[in-house]
Length: 116
Figure: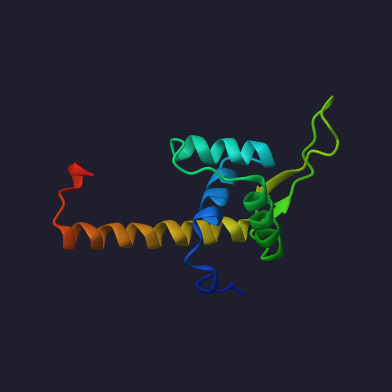
């Protein structure tokens, strides 16, 4: 059975950034916040409330789940999160949707590809 991705799109900016931060590797909350800041060149920063509210919703939607990853000598309360295979499909669909938006914008704004 193929799960319908359409109800999950478009993603909110926070959800998009969180899923993107988890696409390469499992991360803990602070690591997600750091990766979002890095990927956005510090233009988008998640506060703890926004991060954890969104993580909870993404887990309820089965896009993200808590990882069993733990490190020795690390605070046992630290939780790691990872992207599920469904979350990866939703992220890929959102990226494709955004690519379409950018293509349309280029056509309507007549902006050469190199100028962006």
